[in-house]
Image (cartoon, rainbow, N blue to C red; front, top):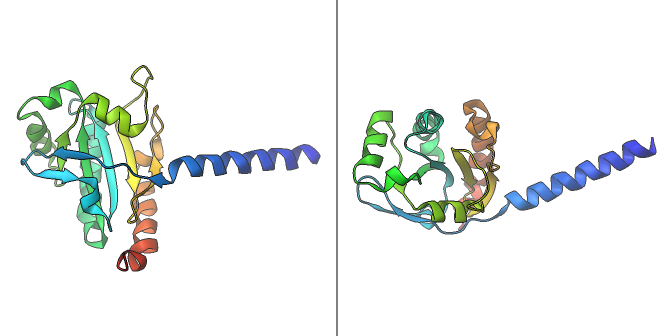
Length: 180
């Protein structure tokens, strides 16, 4: 019985440490989207923001972008904003991000940033292995509420999970966001 209590306590502390790492202020991110418009994360304060860090050539990123576009359409009126952050080398070439947006029917801003910018934002070392897409969820108050692990987090790419998770954030903070 004593070992069960110890295990429960250890799991509780592990969960708390994980939650502390996820809930932190979101750094500013700036880019220019495929239409030429400047996009700053701070401009979306008061909205729940999902940032998809992606490679334009990645099939999983393409599928996730289409799913996030559906969520944008459904939950946008409630205060959701999706942003795509392309950081593969090809994304830096003119027209590549625009082609990605058109080919996948994306209706949210997508723009390129450098690999260093993306990895710095995500807190991933350049020598660390990682997968794409990487997802970051920012609440209405500018706090990161969820972030993919470098090896990916399946729940953050699952439409049903995200709909429920985002729905909770949108409801929870909709009344307090109006006071900010």
